[in-house]
Length: 215
Image 1: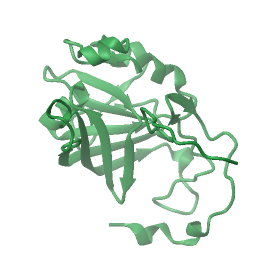
Image 2: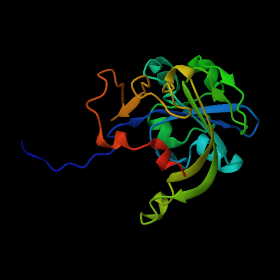
Image 3: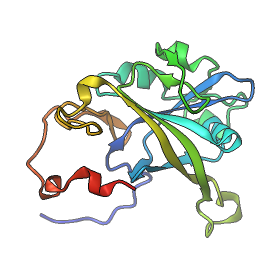
């Protein structure tokens, strides 16, 4: 089996889809589907474009909610996929077919519910909601030509409260998720996938008590 050298435009090898909810300047809610997100401890790092309304909202309010859709919510995610909360749609997004949409919850058929510790609403239909507050903002591409510097941002947030469907909880534990019941939606090279084939095998790491990772 040979290998070829290629130069991909994107590197979405497979990450969970996240519906990020924020609050606009006029107090209305905004939703953005993203797939550049990863976690360590109770921190998440979100990859966002500088021109995104979500980015502006997060930096201004220092708050957001990370809602994780299950693999049966494709219709909702696709309804949001090429919309933006920015009235003056950036040229790069116009080129990709984006349009301005004020009522993101309405077009996606989703229901806002109040959060406990932050202002942005949670998405009721998502099985997982993580209320979060900004810790730090990092501008990327600092070594690029001037016009590209800071065009992408890595925003570190702290998860301050987590809500999950009861049916996802692992019996006998107060704070664990049953991975056999959790079916996240995965983005891989712009396409949506699930985990319907189930677990590949038992992992040696699964023998470690999850509580030992608590920060």
